[in-house]
Amino acid sequence: MPERDVTVGQLLLTEYQTVKDEQKTRIGFRDNLLYVTLTVVAAVIAAAAQARQTAMLLALPPVCVVLGWTYLVNDQKISAIGAYVRQELGPRLAATARAGDGEVFRWETAHRTDTRRVSRKVVQCVVDLLAFCVVPLSALVVYWAGGDVSAGLAVVSVLEAVAVVGLGVCVVQYAVPFGAGGATG
Image (cartoon, rainbow, N blue to C red; front, top):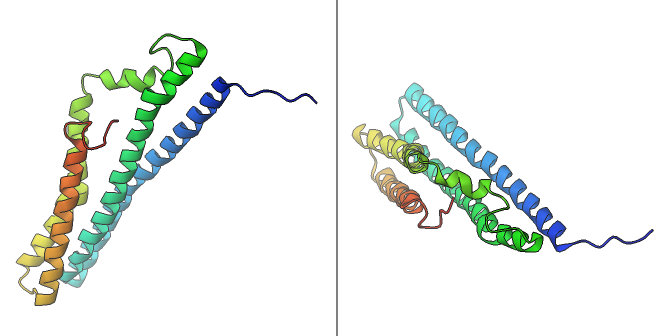
């Protein structure tokens, strides 16, 4: 049985399929993180309300920070894959196929010229901030306003607030100006 030679073009197409599969998997995982966050928030709020224990709300900030950070990291990886395909893999495949500039993987760049892209990015940033930062900060405000704040939990809650604000800064830095801070998607 004769051995088949693998061409550079075949290798590049295989690499493309592999990174696109990873991107698709990461998109599904990232989107599920938002649903998990909403579920956890609802469960903690319901439990705190039923038990009439505002201290239970202190569970929200660490959960939201961990899920929010994981969401942000996955979003960055998704964008990095898109940038790699546009800036590295596409041009290499075009050169191998002797195609003109922009003749391969056109969707990778075409969707970026949509006139509503910036507004969608702004809305996504607001949604991310609401889900991962505003909700846990609101939980802290409710805890602090509840009046039954022990010294130890007050310190914990302030540290949680700092962590949530730090995440918020990262979310905004990543989104503005919709490409700086590593977000190229």
